[in-house]
Length: 321
Image 1: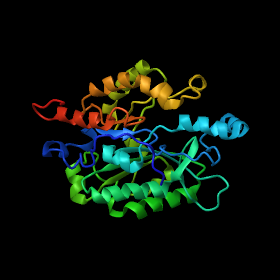
Image 2: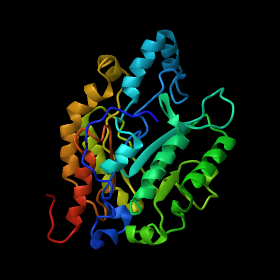
Image 3: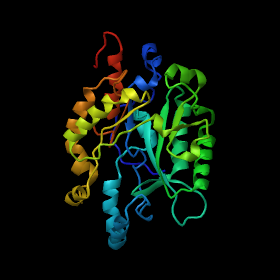
Image 4: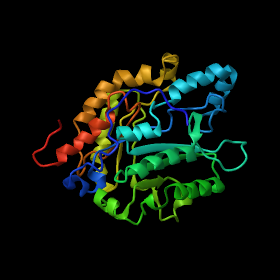
């Protein structure tokens, strides 16, 4: 797999295994867990066709402008710089995954996708499994929440692939929602897969998407995003499940036009990070508190360490240092 250009985030490769017994015995849904948005988008293929997740007008424009159009798409499709392993070493434990077949391609191969096609899913899963094998107390969430151009045969192929790659590391969905890290360590479970499609309903190893709501603000305004995060966080009690706070901004067409050459990171993300991170630092996990928080370009402000430290607030007489 190709390696992305990166900075040097703090190493949090074993942060879950290093938690105190007071935290590892708490329900996992009450801990603060750092995640990444469009986790796989550190590399996209400019030579491949535009993905089926895009509107027809985008496909036509990309076809008209050819390589130039793809370069612009790349600037706005990439939401991460770090590879899967680099994200894991930085402390990221939740992965937002969108997948697709390549229309017209023979067989059932599945790729990551966000506007443009990324790596084969199998390659990404193998990289993740390699990390987990070396860090036996780390647990990850894989959230397969968007599937494009996939028939039943494609889903069957992907579900089989997940079982083949992770094997006994997969956590069964008949586990209680009050599962703790200590329980997972005892069972040697390291992977919780959420699969948002009916094809996985009969599999005891795939958790339904309803168990991990991830409300989406769909705004370019940081203040509106914060309001949305507060409102949806206040509503999580009635779900009684895991919860994803998507601390991300979503560009509109006019946003892309205005920042055409700069791209997502330089035009939208960097200038709004201070406001978003102020909100993150003010949060507390626990009952009705934050659980999973996702971000774009997780290495820019050492996002993962900031989220992990929130767990100190759950300890008696402890504060964030």
